[in-house]
Image (tube, rainbow over all chains, first blue to last red; front, side):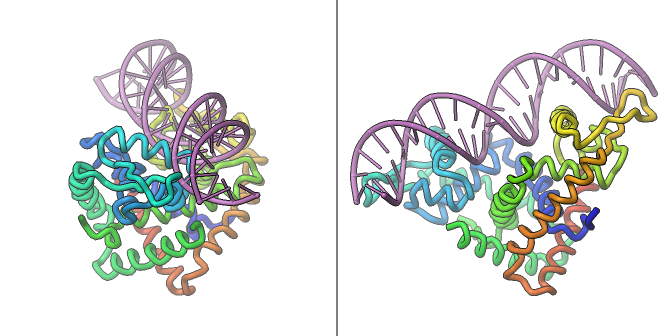
Length: 143
Length: 143
DNA sequence: TATTGTTATACTCTATAACTATA
DNA sequence: TATAGTTATAGAGTATAACAATA
């Protein structure tokens, strides 16, 4: 069999599984999940985006993005505003959504700290820079 | 709001979303999913492990691990062998499972290559080493 | 008492396909 | 024709809680 130690996908998946578990734990007090917070973050970073655009950023399809927005709207965290194109919605965080997101990010930052504890400050910066580069490239490929 | 560019969890999640999408695409021809291949990999790396141990390695609980093993056993990829402790099962890959896994890893390695294309060889090695370090540390914390 | 596997049940997240309204 | 959103349906993956058998 091939060398698993050298498999990027395998190692990334194991790392993500653990990071996700920790994030889920941190968000439990808010009754939220990592997937929903990620959606809030994308909307915060792209205020006024459409549901289709949200789906692309999350690597999911329109129907799934819509269900996510439904849930977040019901929770009062996101609102569907009229868009230039009357077929579309412009997604924005509500005031409550922005406030809740900040609190959740505080909790998540602590989870990050624990996860990154074994790394030196330089190694952390390198890792973040590399991951960002890949994430950005991936985003371009998908959108 | 906090600086998303510096959020490790956020960037890792976006990266994983894209990696997962690519892996899913690569595995489509095999009728398999990333989660199941990861389970096969853990069993391959820890032949004879129990379902509980599999769950810990995957950061999921016993009941979920059992469902996963049920599916893999039905597919003829994994078998439950008797263990020293009669309460437990010793999980092993079948011959077909080992063969199928090798073929799937080939497909996944190509997906990895595309994903890592923007990085220099040095950056790739650094990234893999760092991710492995974190994944191993995380595994210790969970198990 | 604690642990392994198991069963039953439910929830989150995602997918596909088909529909509507508008471009 | 193509696109944004929607609806209906289905499946994968995970969780919790409670149970039996064994340590």
